[in-house]
Amino acid sequence: MIAPSADSSGRVASGRAVADARWLALHLGPNERRAIVGLGDLAALLIGLMIGLSVREIGIDLQPAFVLPPLLWIGTLFAAWLLFAPAFDAYSQSRVNVPYASAMASGQAALATVIAYFLIPYVTAPLLNSRLVMLVFAITTIGLIGAWRIAFGFLLGRLAVARTVLVVGAGWAAQTLAQAIESSGSGFALAGFIDLERDEVTAHDRRVLGGRRDLPTLLTSRRVTDLVVADDSRLPGDLVKAVVTAYEAGIYVHTMASLYEQLTGRIPVEHVGDDWAGAMPRIERHAGLGALTKRTFDICAGVIGLVALAAFYPFIALAIRLDSRGPVLYRQQRVGHRGRLFDVWKFRSMVDHAEPDGQARWATRGDPRVTRVGRFLRAARIDELPQIWNVVRGEMSVVGPRPERPTFVAELERTIPFYRARLLVRPGLTGWAQIKYRYGSSAEDALVKLQYDLYYVKHRSLWLDALIVVKTVPVVLRLAGR
Image 1 (cartoon, rainbow, N blue to C red):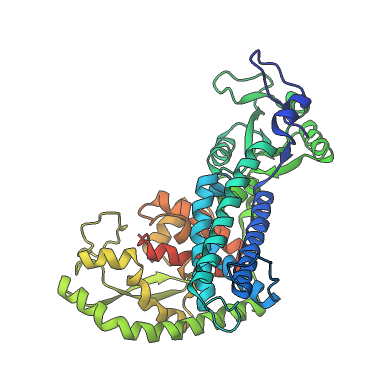
Image 2 (image 1 turned 120 degrees about the horizontal axis):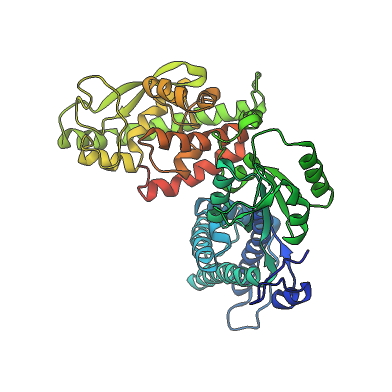
């Protein structure tokens, strides 16, 4: 399908002209773009390893000949890359499409991968016999991945055409989706809206292209690849027929909630309307292998964490006591799995008696109640380490929504749809919302974090848990926890 373009007179250019300008028009979605760039990354890693082994085997002064590495060496290198690439957002939609940003993120991930590869004994290629070989392998690998990312960005501009999205509806939900499309850098482009309230084009928004009767014509004239039904009301029969016809013609048909979820990693709870079932996560009444594996990991991580905490506790306690008066630890009641109340333990990061009247208050950025040491503890998330004990006890998990105080839960349940759905899983030390959004200090922030939390609850898996744990590490190292 060739996307149209317009000349200076506003007329649509021919398909041949567009093809000549772009060589070949490909409508690539975000997942397709990530898949292509991912395969190129793995190829660059393999070539870098082969060059490094060639230098090791025959010497730098001889004619280079590629050495095919054993599968164990290749698999370990790929595994290390798949661990670090998500941690540095090397596959985020906003970076894959921008050559410089993509090269920087992938270069950092490649550097971490190379260092980790050198440090894993027995199952990695023996590249440590000389500094020259190590240097060749590192420079080649990082350089190839960076060059591939820049080349991909160039080819993307030449070959790829944005997927054209037409939205059925022009209300609040449609406007929210339009903002997500424009800010995601995902390879989608908004064609415009269909206003269901009237048959004539409205004057207040130029993105409104027509009424319901114009849908069949616009699908053809605008070369639409994706049709989104954003109106929450029941569609009339003639519009349903037009949507089905579009589907039969090979046009992707989405609901507003499904495409928004794909673009942002959030569930738009305030816009789901009659599609409320799409926002609700699946419920597992009986623990399966995944639940058993998750609990086993929680216990093992908890025990290791308690040992590490015991080693660092004296230094943390001394810093807290020297900075301000009051106890080192304090406990606070939170709402956990299925609404059960439990007490969490935290290192004190605020002045003693921060809430003298007993009234719960949101913690904000620059909160004067936070001590100097407390700011560091919060930024590095060290203040939450005593909650490892809650993980061992089964009240929390390593990964899950953050537990909130009962007062805030009661308040947010009254104002935010589906808020209680986040209680369907155990709360966690880290989570999807924590790595994707800033520290929440208001009901508005709580709504955004709920959207992320529901996405996690709906799509939870061992892979997603592993991804969250890996992406938490850079957050902690950058002191971006609060």
